[in-house]
Amino acid sequence: QEFILEPFGADVFGLPVSVTTSFNITFGAGMVLAMVASGGLGILHGHFPSRRILVWANLIGAFAFIVLAVSPLLETSLVPILAIFVLGSAKGLYNTGLAHQFTTLAGPDTAGLVMGAWGAVGGFAMALGGLAGGVLVDATEALVGAVGLSYSSAFAVEAFLLVIGAVLLRSRS
Image (cartoon, rainbow, N blue to C red):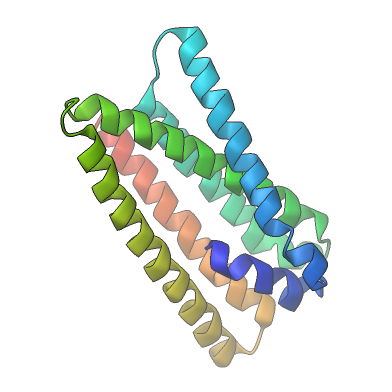
């Protein structure tokens, strides 16, 4: 739901554009740090538990979305900014775990093809998820007339889906 984070900051917390546009930097910093840290730990540890990393990425992402969902009640803009950093960290873990999972499962001749196909699927999913999030925010706001609740509903749905993903990943290990 990266697409609705900036309007969320403006609509719910009244943050100026100069602050909401920095959400992408905050998200990206968390993502890069998590990718470097998880990759480095995998190298130091001698193996990379990609499925476990994917489960943790989903759970951490769900936690960040829950914090975002309740943040309108807290009336402080610091909480969502920290949650956005944690959300970026979860995505970094997910990216690292998924890349390792693909290179492990696919043979050397097909790893690039599999990763490319997943990139295309991921791009489509981001577009569809952003559209669905925007529609959910707008529909909820039209029904209940509460801006904070409309964003909270989208974040809660995302948290729920990430928990389902973690359960499915865990059940397959």
